[in-house]
Image (cartoon, rainbow, N blue to C red):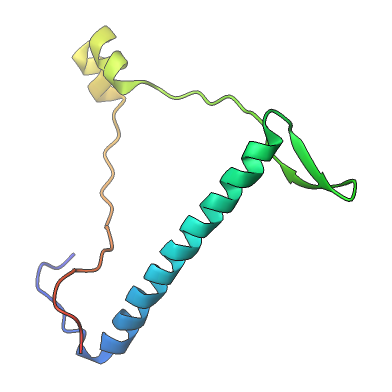
Length: 102
């Protein structure tokens, strides 16, 4: 990975379009979430919703198991937690807010 900035002048239009599409996607995500809330409210505890007798939506329960790291650290020797900890380096993509790209 490099720490020097890379000139993206030739991608100004692409970055501007990405900003606009992300904003539009966020609006659609909010709208979809609201519609989902309405459907889930109607379903209540039912697993299946139908239109004209045909299943069109499922809303099923499932059980998920996860390790509570805070509790593990309290109950386990530090070396055990350290031995079971995996470190991963990832890159995060984000737009820098501020001046508009002309």
